[in-house]
Image 1 (cartoon, one colour):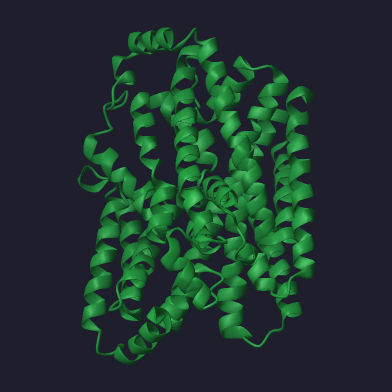
Image 2 (cartoon, rainbow, N blue to C red):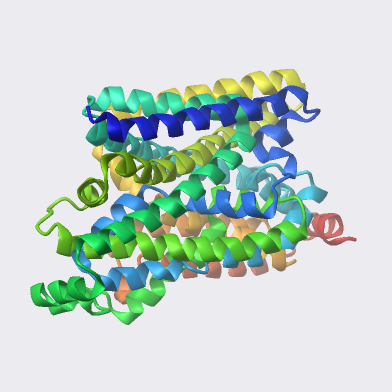
Length: 488
């Protein structure tokens, strides 16, 4: 075992544990367990809001998968990744004050809370909760596999032992600290991700002899590596521009991102988060993907893309510094997993149990059930990750797209279009998820665009058409909803 690499990672995990215990003090003293455990009592400042959105959005794909693809395809993939630059700005601009004001008015703790009050329909809630549990459960398990693989490659431990270390680390601080622990650790992880990106990029450029020689090496190997269309010329302008639907517009529909837009303390904090989030996301995405491309000059011939970042870090940096830098992908994976774990737990406890099983449950019972459900979900994910089935990997590939197709219009149109109703929301969820699965299976990248584009368009059409058709049927409920949500 390379202790010079492992020790910085262990120090990082100790810091995360300490934050979890610090956040647990708020759970002991809070008068509203649900607000604190699942939303941090809506007290996030601008910097923490920006960093928790970045850390949640950035996952194993940003630090391991993305640079690996960039290594294979070239600078065209860097251009593609930069479509994510405006994501945080877009999410907070679209949801922003309006979403936070409505959420506070109805005391919403989760995204489904908002949908429940907005549409006043049990089936909208159940369909939404099932979508979150199904898609995010599988996405979370695949992230755990990524975290275990990273620990395994760095320490030489067996896969199962590495998975156990990762699982315990995440479970402990989420269970004891809740959303506040997740938000604060996301901030630490976001800072690690930022500086890790800076260090590895500089180290790779120095090892390659400078940007000029690196670019010459790439051009000599394959001129298409430095073209905007990719090594295999697959990145057409239509595909690149449509990719922004998945990583930009559609992110509004991701429950784990949307919930952060209802958790900030003030408008001033949100505006600060817009600026910080845009700058940090831009730097991290540019830096990590450029590193992936430049690594091709320093370490040619790598066949497995997912190993590019660990190998280039070990190659161009001293062992102790490589350990610090490799805490960045670990931070990215952990920060995504902790948010998904809390989100799936809230879907079970808040959106199903408290709404339809035992609405009269007291705070003490809710606390026990919340911690119990979070623990059980974590153990189930651990069991799935020990020997993940191929179906799990397939589900992970389209889980984010499926969630976006399901939620984007019920959320956005629910905020801005008073005529939208439960019929339109149900039609949008069913059409979005159903068409995404079909397109992904039988007609991926239809018409040269990313697979998510057509389902998002179809779910929009379904929302509008069915809302208009069923307007009279839902008229009474709509009047009540408009009075409740849009009144001063």
